[in-house]
Length: 371
Image (cartoon, rainbow, N blue to C red; front, side, top):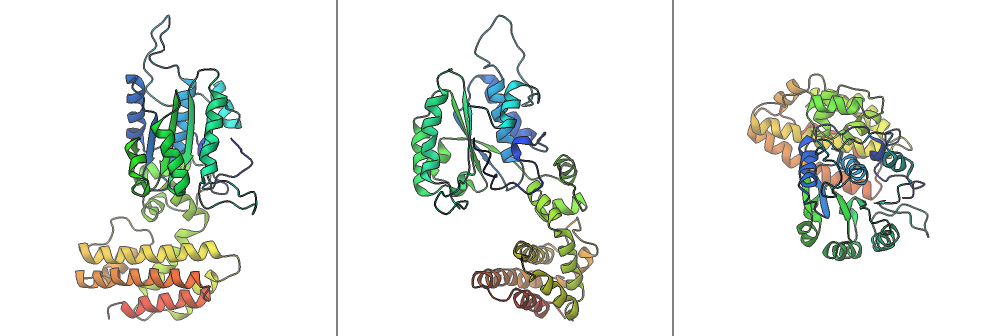
């Protein structure tokens, strides 16, 4: 592994999935792998699927440590050893220490790489990244032990890389296990999916989210229940919201929404100007993501006749119920959500003035609020 290159999906200040001490809320997925291991019928390729940020990469690294540190159940020996009930490997184990330092020769992690010409991170995993695995398998085969490859994430492989991986899955190297991380497995080649056993990871509930955030190594600012609600149960999404002040931005949006249809224009201008500050591109993108989410919650309130059970901001339930009192109004908000999303994407793509784009979006929402 080359640890000089940052993990593409690692948050600043957050632990790398390799170093995350525990995986919370995914006991079923862990049990699925353990069952296959203990049966002695371990598949050579595994597809770890589920929403972004729920722990797929953390599970992949846990599996890698476990496989490389645990004797095969069918290896035989003088004494019977009990079947393992957990993927936990002591941090002091030699394999765990080598993995932590990036020095485990039987483990290879494939992520988006740096283009040597531009010196920038590529947007895709390219064919050379996959073909390099041939050398890894040849060099690591001498001791006859297991080898593990983590591909994070398989969704961003280009066509040539996907075809190269497919050939590898069709003729898998001996005693090799490939772990493919995918947020949207439907986008993978069907022939790749068919050659993998799937472990599905689900979203975390508020209690699990609180535990996961406490173990994240990040000083979290905000209510775990609200973070779980806005992130859709994604730990990664919750951490991003916390680190970027997402709960405060959403609270400000709900505050503006509560003033509609007569929108507090001064408050809207202040929010728009804050989003337009130099170097605030990420916060601008987050703002539009939260606008999309707010409109979706309005539409769902109208369709179901009740606001979400968990408020993501104070006063949200009352505001959503007032502005989405009927299924008809819910459809209006659903249609507007698509329009706003399209306008925002176009505006960002052609570099429209960010403040004007935000203010225009807020005015459009106010126009559609029932009077």
